[in-house]
Length: 142
Image 1 (cartoon, rainbow, N blue to C red):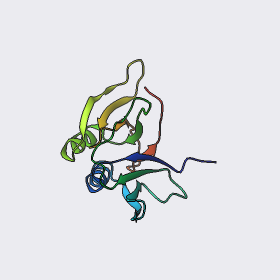
Image 2: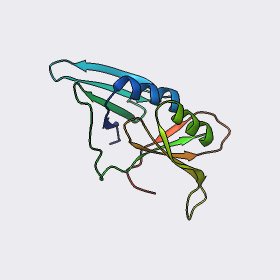
Image 3: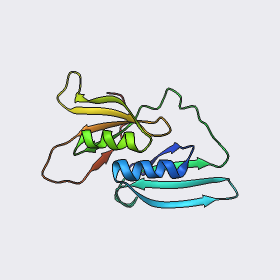
Image 4: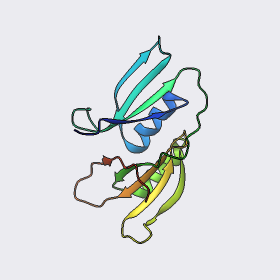
C-alpha cells in the first residue's frame, strides 16, 4: 500500500496550477475535464503517480468559494532554499504566514505559506549535495 495523492478543492484551477508550477516547480502530471459531473481534476507533482504521491487539484465548475474547515493540517514540502520559495509564493498569489526560521524545540528551518486558496504548506529546508526538491505529505501539525 502507498499514498497516491491528496485532493484539495480550488476556486481557480489555472491560478492554482500556476502557483504549484512556479513556486514549487511541480508539473501537471495529468488533467481531465468531466463535463457530465461539471468538474476538472489536475494532478500536480514531481513525477508520475506510479512512483510519487501527487496533489489532486479539484475544480468544481461554478463554485467560487469553499470553507477550509479545521480538520486539515497542511502539506509539507522539503525545499533547498526556503527564502527563495517564500519569495516565489508571494509572487504567485500565495502568502507567507510564518517566516523562515528554526522550528520551536527543534533544529529544522521551517516556514509556512498559504496557496491562493488558503491551504497551508509547510516548507522544510534541507541542505544537501543534490538540488532536486522532494515532497512528503504530512497531515499532522508541527
